[in-house]
Amino acid sequence: MSPRSASVNEELRRRSRERLLQATVELVAERGYEATTLADIADRAGSARGLVSYYFPGKRQLLQSAVHRLMHLTLEAALEREPRSEDGRERLARAIDAILGLAVERPLLMRTHMAGILQAEGFVQGPEQQRLASLLRDTVDRYGSRDVDADYPLLRALLMGAVFAVLLPGAPMAPARLRAELFQRYGLDWELGVPPDGEPSGGTHEGGQPFQR
Image 1 (cartoon, rainbow, N blue to C red):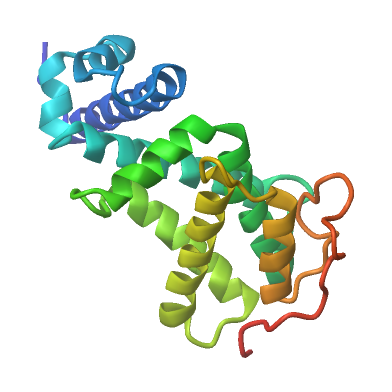
Image 2: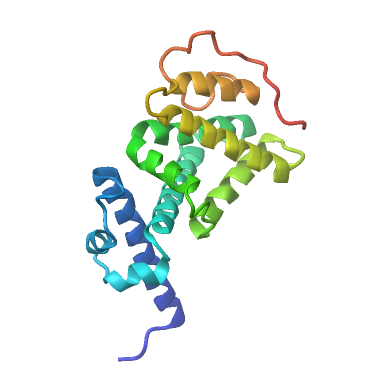
């Protein structure tokens, strides 16, 4: 049997990493962070325990990469869903709805992710995060930003703040209210994206302060 080519080995490594990331999302969503071990993740992924340590320095880093992958896939699906749109305002609305939707649909997972970022490990800038960042930067660019390097971090901060507000124990904010504020900030019509049923108290607040074009 001839040895596998470098491209085949690279594809096998990619698939192995993807299985670990998917298993992490599933298990943390089911059991929580503390109850999920690296051995559990390896078993769910059908991988050797040593592969987890080979790809990731620790469980927090693995979780961040897994959630960043989920966010990237969710955002990508939202931006490319039918009917396809190249309109920058529509794409930004879809991006906001996609990220807020994750906070609503996967609260335990996203709360754990946010908590990890605020701890000593900080923000992990791995390949999954870089793909997510690239997609958000492209969204900001298509929206019409004249300074993507400044406006992308601002959008990221606003989205993270909105997710935190949705998940804040004991004092959560309504996603529709947060959506209205973000749409006002960027001058987006309420009907763009995937609007929730009804409107938040106070109306849709059209006519915010969009990027300078």
